[in-house]
Image (cartoon, rainbow, N blue to C red):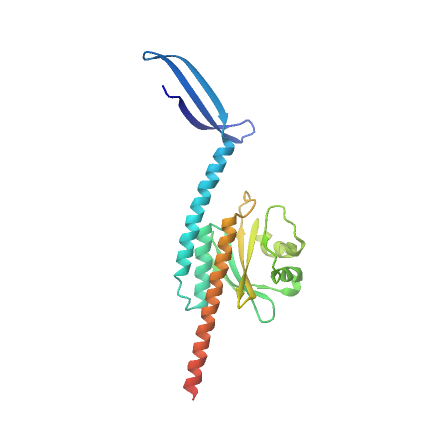
Length: 238
């Protein structure tokens, strides 16, 4: 007779949850059980790893689906394209807020679009001034990677986090640079309000870099459209 295996959850005295595997083998006298031998083991860590793997696999599928959707954008209107990028990306990652900020000619950053998952609303035109956050802007032009984790207290981020993020309940941020012709022209800012979230996964970071790439494609398309328009105007004036 094969042993019986049962997995179940138990709540400890401190209200934490553990997963238990109970394996029982019965000894039978014809059709009557006369004895049993069992073993109980704590499989909480294994269960957590299994759940993490499953969530990661699901996340990768969602990311691939979103990237496919982003690749189908027409890129004929910069504002509408960036709105689509932030909304599609936020829903795919289930991230509370995603913003695209672009550098203006005066060196300040302007929010081209920001999508809030909880409200479903887009906002734009907020200005982040270089004079108020010089160390943050210096970081943006560097090659340093920034993946905010709980407990992080980077000095160059302190004012930015205090003024732009904490008032809205943001717990974690992830920043990726947008480049055009090799130059940094903006950033993607992803925000999480999940107090239980302690870090960003490698898959989330890779996705944010891919999103920055789609913004670059949108900017390049707009350049081409602007150049074509200038040529048409020039020809019509002759």
